[in-house]
Image (cartoon, rainbow, N blue to C red; front, top):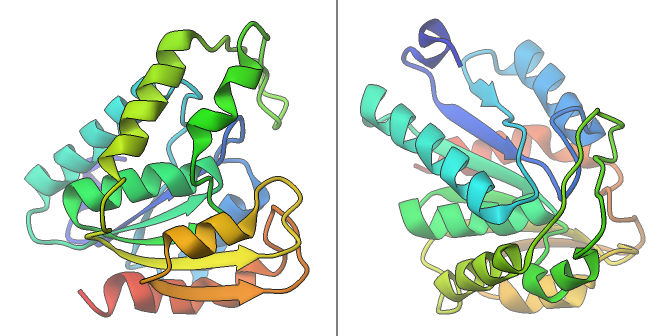
Length: 207
């Protein structure tokens, strides 16, 4: 983000899923819609490493910089899949509102299945990763940070047709938060664009 982008504008940080990227369909949809309908909102979609420690360090630096330079301006989070988990960690740490889309609730459970593999982003970008036991340990530590009652303000968007993650886990985890649960759909959350304006209202019009 440039200095001019940060000037006196609320910040929406979009967190993509595991091995996804800012080029994902939902991310690009929201970026285009905001530019047209809500240009007063700064949109930031960092490329997140699948290594959780690296991803959290980058996100913490981004938020701390914004808070220092634009003290008092609102920050809202939108996180999809693994990004939903990271958004929850940040929401608890900084008491931020977040919209969580088909989130991973216990990601440390599935990470060991990727150990020893060379991983490539689903977007086809020329990057590769290899997860380690240390990454699994870091993810478990992050899960422990949100193991108690949630202190942030969350809106869960989930579709029961999610073929990757069990929506019932997310419904239980965010049980005391605002929820929109739809039958059918899939892990990408079909029709996400229907909620763009409502997301902005939730993140910024209640702060």
